[in-house]
Length: 72
Image (tube, rainbow, N blue to C red; front, side, top):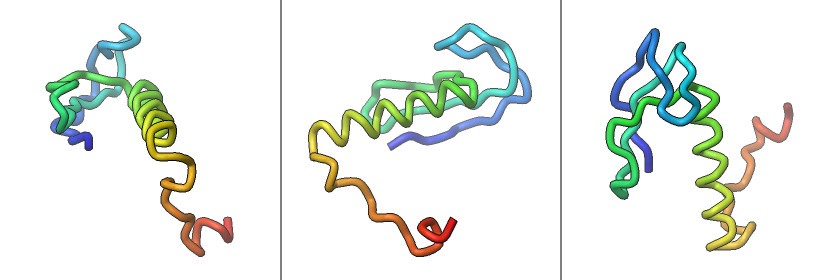
């Protein structure tokens, strides 16, 4: 689980080195502690985490889509 601890109007992403809108993120497993990430880098992190979870638990472990999500 990831916790967003702070929103920054301007910050330097620790993953990409780019400066701009960013957030400070901490992971409950200790892998990240107050890491500054851009919004695109956060998306990459979440996709990576989802893929790792899927490899470990199988694709059927993904949450089912809701009726609202299916209607879009």
